[in-house]
Length: 555
Image (cartoon, rainbow, N blue to C red; front, side, top):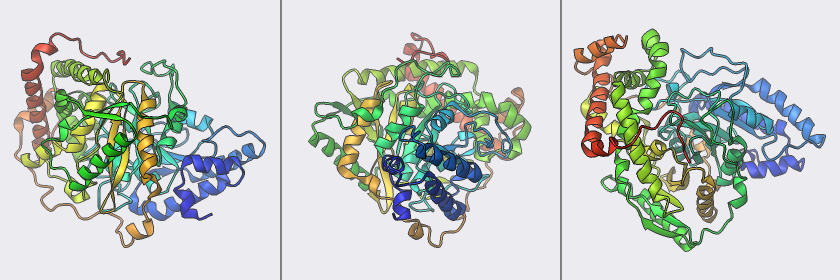
């Protein structure tokens, strides 16, 4: 069998060969290790590769299967995980030099479940430091897109998208707070799901945004995604936020008829955005395919979704700051990426009352979105309005207000955040290519109804078959340097020193240097404006609801 074909084969097809004795887990692991060794110095998908352990596990797996002890379709399948979850004997760095030597004597629940199913861990995958998007410096090399190494692989689970797309593993597990699974899946041409909050245990993960973070799989096909989620989902006594709902075999309903399904089109958030014509055509084509299969599509309105970006800054960023303020910002300011530390430092200055008000607003945004599912089985919208951008265009000198405003209003954030604000399941589904770069749309469903989400995604995928296309790394990486194009020469400028921000920093124990005070100030100003805008629009309604508590019903 052709090695390249095998490397990009679906989990389902690999599993059939392994069960039949036609494919050795030893050979499959070795194939992926060879590809990691060949390409990772350019793509920077991995932080740690546990080659010896993976080879040993593959030999044990081969012996088990030969003895008739086949555990199921993940037995012998190699995978990687975002370097944000504990793995026994393998460091967990969060892509930070502060954490690079952190070890663990236990696995995160997600990893333990995959190992129990017979899957083989290849290593840990690269990310933006601490899982927060917007990094400028990468301690394990800057992640790059296998379809074009000078274009963004998106954040923050960058390596978890790159690795399966580049044929370096069969699947990955990423983590999604505000699009960190769906974004890399979009950029890599993968199926990537953010499950319902509480569907998958977070135990053993560094889940700094504790009311939104959730783990989810990135795979080459929807069926593979459904398989992996079936294994990792379920209640965990070690994570009190996990739900107790039964876990179905998500694959069982994949081929179900979607005729008559009511699907709402969420166009509202893209109305004023400059959509790429190829993306628009792909989205309209997707809609026509679903209609041809009998789905009933109509446009829906989610006006409160426009507050998603503001609420993300006010809630999840603030939660992250509460965890990193001492261990990172106070003790290791210079060792933290400048973009990340500015984002977290600004959030650390947010008054507790503003955080609580934002959590009240979340109740309203979530309620409006959940109401749409009363009349619709699923919602669909874009993952992004453009194909993956050049890396140099995603870099901005955030000391300049015009660049900062552009960064904050980034379309992918606007399209992703409403679903994590509401903690409903949402998934990227590839819908074609533009100049060789992937495009994608999002499908979402009500809490704990991943089965319907998968059915819609699978119906479309089987019609178009984009999963059969993969990057030819010999071509796309030919002549590529080990780092992307040089950074925009405008970056690195220092804005006006902000003594007011430095004074606020002192109140919470942060010594904010002159050269960082401008960006921290811009971010803080944006947060203050955001809560003002939200209060002006929703203040009376916010007074009528309770804020979402840390452990809240997601039924």
